[in-house]
Length: 151
Image (cartoon, rainbow, N blue to C red; front, side):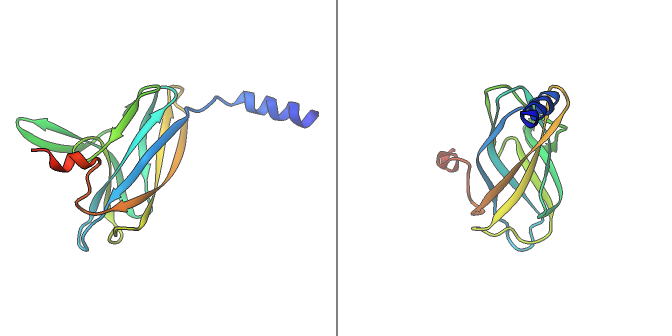
């Protein structure tokens, strides 16, 4: 009984981390000399949280990016974090928010799997990680079939 009580007390001493689920992660394949690609997915957090960092052993630099229109020009830039509102799915997709994998150590080939670690920060500033194995899709892949057919 002492073990159960001690375990319960130890568990109670730690704040509950935001429960985060990730659906349909994938990475776009590259050509041989290409040094960057994107990772895409759908992230849902049970509590308000932020995606504050991403890591992958296949890239020297990994950043969370956004695509924005500025004076009729689409620009991509790193952001410090991406809000994950409680219960709402945030989609990382081509042409929108995404994880940018740069300074690639080797070609990312279709059919391979890329490990990606997401760092999530809760409202209490405590951080947790989500480990992903993202399949690599063809260079021409879009997040949804209809996205390839928009005019």
